[in-house]
Image 1 (tube, protein in one colour):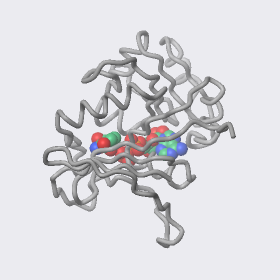
Image 2 (image 1 turned 180 degrees about the horizontal axis):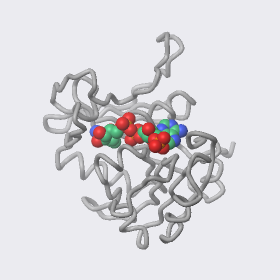
Image 3 (image 1 turned 90 degrees about the vertical axis):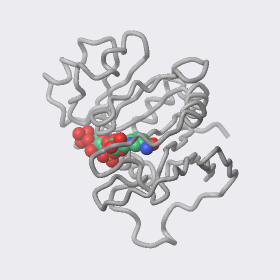
Image 4 (image 1 turned 90 degrees about the horizontal axis):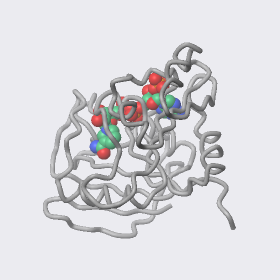
Length: 217
Ligand SMILES: NC(=O)c1ccc[n+]([C@@H]2O[C@H](COP(=O)([O-])OP(=O)(O)OC[C@H]3O[C@@H](n4cnc5c(N)ncnc54)[C@H](OP(=O)(O)O)[C@@H]3O)[C@@H](O)[C@H]2O)c1
């Protein structure tokens, strides 16, 4: 059967206690070995998707640099079209295809400002970006595989909607703690374990002082 939406791979590096960033947003968790592995994975997908806070906190490029391969498209969920013009994503959008997905909450002015750049703005959803509609738009653009690179709030949206097909998570040898540190999956969470997303463990890959876990739905 032909899938009507792209395949979603959740990818993250998290501490042994399940955090993807410290309470002040420090997310420098990955070793060089893991960066190489992630960049090889990036080269195999059509797009990388992240949330607005990840762009604000980390200012990521979301490119393939530690491995050889083509840069995938970048997609940012940014309801109010507030991505900074000086962000590395905007600064490199003439070279790497970029979609900024906004909602109807974004002002016309903010959208017009974004449209000055060589990128695509899609307006989907009332208050937040409607992820299901976005995936339909992306499927029409022949986007078959998406690497979901967080953060925790966007990860929850995909988990909540039952859209995670694979999860590849590196367990980093840190215990960072902090109730305000960002967890792998944030949001409201499920009330019962029996109602939560259950995945199948496919592979355990020791990697120096880290372990890479691969799950499928
Ligand atoms: N270790 C790792 O692998 C890793 C990977 C990625 C990120 N991180 C860390 O994670 C932290 C950021 O995570 P976060 O949870 O604060 O934020 P996030 O998931 O990066 O972004 C969340 C934001 O995305 C926007 N958004 C738009 N539509 C949405 C939708 N339908 N569902 C959910 N969000 C939507 C919302 O802001 P608007 O309403 O303004 O649009 C929302 O607040 C950073 O500290 C970063 O360093 C770590």
